[in-house]
Amino acid sequence: MTTGTQTQEMQHTLLQHIPHYAVILHNDEVNSMDFVVESLLKSVPSLSQPEAIDIMLETHEKGRCVVIVCPLEQAEHYRDRIRSFKLGCTVEKA
Image 1 (cartoon, rainbow, N blue to C red):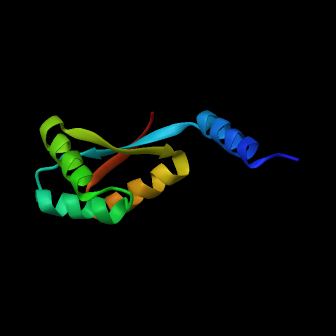
Image 2: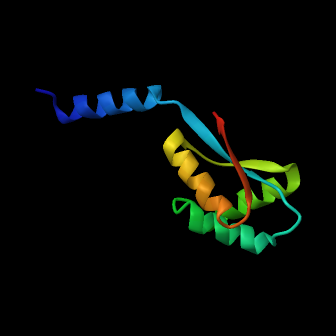
């Protein structure tokens, strides 16, 4: 029988071995900065408004920015949600 601590340790170990993927937002010259921030907040609920603003600004300045890093299925889900707002977004292995 495993204890709660052992279960947490096993979950932590498992998470370390699951490959992670980066959701990448790409800059465009079409959408307003406010629209991008609102789209990010609707697409990735764990983001705060200051985080979404930082992502938008880095994307605007550098051409791309990592939105979130997570397992592949979740990354694809976030990518699809961001794309539903007609924003450029890809997934890359982290």
